[in-house]
View 1: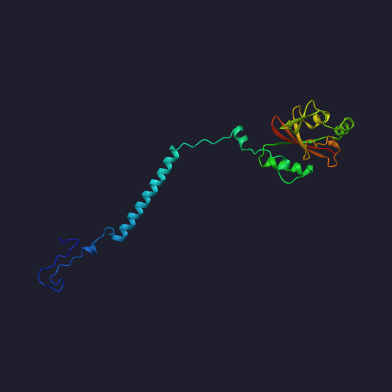
View 2 (view 1 turned 90 degrees about the horizontal axis):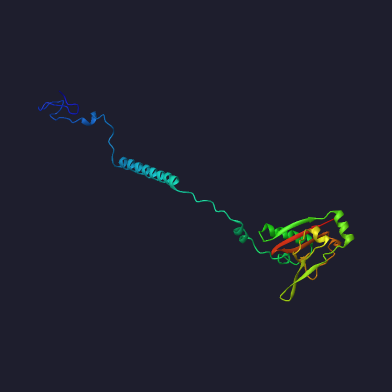
Length: 215
């Protein structure tokens, strides 16, 4: 029987084989092609890359499952209060001005910039203004506050109709009206032609600004 890979020839010389047995096994090889150096290197590189990607994906998945997310940081009222800036006074925030509209704008800007200040808008009705003008338009009954021998503010004692209409309470200390410090405070507030008065007040140590307007 003939071998599938070799041709058996007559050892005697002949024209067909020339006395030589021809090895044709390579012509009958029906298996997969053999890989040489470059092909083997490409496959190894692909396998290594796939292994690295799988390892990274597995590690990320494991971390996502095992890692405990840190709780969100919440700021309490005390922490928020520390972040607020001290109130510089309306005269300490910009150039000197006694325009009540400019001072009201400054007060609102200070609130927007997280300064330690509260702004209260007070709108007096025509009826209230008429009544206050006929009674006595002033802030009488104010007690002077002396600090280191200097007059620093005036304290509201029992209060007056105007003080009650504005929203001032006994114990409130007024340091300035329309930028004018004590003792230059004009008691006749409702006679101002600008129809707006800006009061800088301290209530229990907390700075406040009252913007009182009327027609």
